[in-house]
Length: 428
Image 1 (cartoon, rainbow, N blue to C red):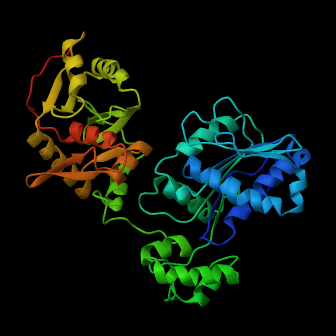
Image 2: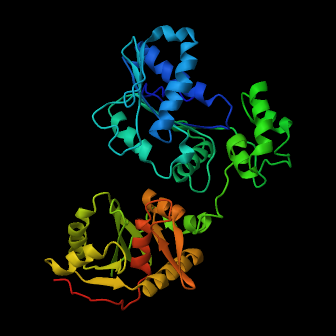
Image 3: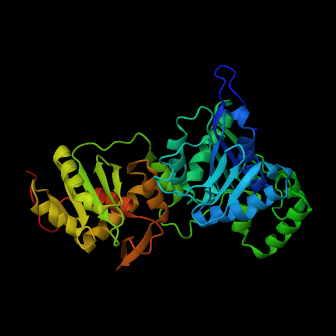
């Protein structure tokens, strides 16, 4: 399963393997078996293997590797292949006599730098709103001939943006009959809107037995207990592997957002630049907008670089900069106005910002805007929350569940009035 070879190249046919299954179906054992095959059968894989395991957080990864996988291994005859298990915080590893090893890896962008990886395991991908974990591993796998990325998870919600993309890609590969690139496996109970739904009761154990693999007596007893105590939505997601929605919390409907996003969307002149910063000044974004199209140009974790970058872009594209005049980007606006060359800055008042938010929101709902697809923008759109302003609203930087600056910057660039309040300084 997913380990087939391409007879023409002699390499693995599938660089990415995706498995989505409900809880209690042996996913931990599956991942461990995949890792052990690499680390023990080194002759078949061309030498000692480096395996990286990741979960939602570093703590989750440690718990799953050290507390779940290692005990299974210790009770197996295969433990004889293990040299030692390192349990120290920050140094968790399983080291094999073959000199192969399984390490934990964080989701930080630079986590995979300075090492090579043969297998990367992205577990519980439903919790990811961007491809940070995959992005941390992929660069370290480029030089390995038979490297693979194993992505495992239960289904997610409309905020599971990374897994949504992976599932769409996998299902499309299956529908197209592809036999290379990605191997996709899914076990789930059909939902009411699925073509093969036949009216089954989601709480009927006989239905579970038909669609859920590895449903032994222990798993069945667990599901019966959980069915009584969990909400229907979470039961569907966790134990039936059905995608659910969080529309009650989400401001921008997922369907509306999907409808306006395009991979090839490009702004057209004349351009406006939206710029925004989080209150803690640990994140910021620059967006270009023109011709009804917005594109995230760059995100920043060091906002001290934003002023120079904005000045460079303004000069190159003859674009004015739009900010929330009462927001945390005001200091950068001061630098742009007073530095050299001077930049035309449009500072929106709070009422103007509220109008811009309404204009942008209506454009998304009505399909009158196009947005170039990017993970940070998708993430911001999913996690953005409202802050009331009279009978209107603005995007809240403090109550939103994510870095919302890409969406705020897009809103400013798209929705600013033609003549914004505040001083305007011409670009030179």
